[in-house]
View: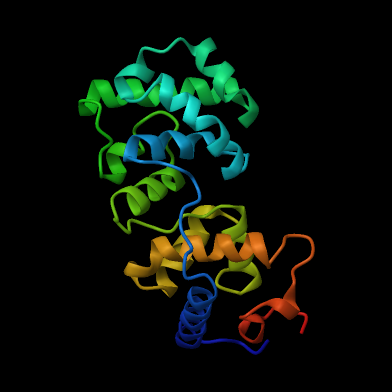
Length: 216
């Protein structure tokens, strides 16, 4: 592909966004939640597993521990039994209990709508904070970068980096602030349905004509 100016890359990127939005008008966070607390816990549990798996365990988890106070007082072994199938259950149980205790100690049990406070809590990195802020509070603090988003961002030449922090920075330069949260959902949906890691379905891709990695 010929060398692309920043302006041309930005225009191409936002055209891709528009086409993906047409293809996936219902794109959204696929973790089930009813409030910021549930979303935060579900997001922590989603590390290295699927949203489907997390959604299978959270109903029982939130029935037993419906709020930060209840989870903060939970016995770790009891939490481990509920979330066992998500993998890394010991560290995840420790993180979500620590998260709940942090909420009780520092924020009266309420999830703060501030990236600085969120990332100070156990189990919450920038990616998790972006998920919480964007989907529970409608705050476009940044762009979530998971394996799908990193893969598609490189294939589409939105970035040439592998570091999530650098990928996020490149995406934030290409897309206007108001698109950041939905951008992540669109890329994730496309990555799960068409732009597979091993065998991308380029002939079925609505943005193949704008993708430097397309095989068609």
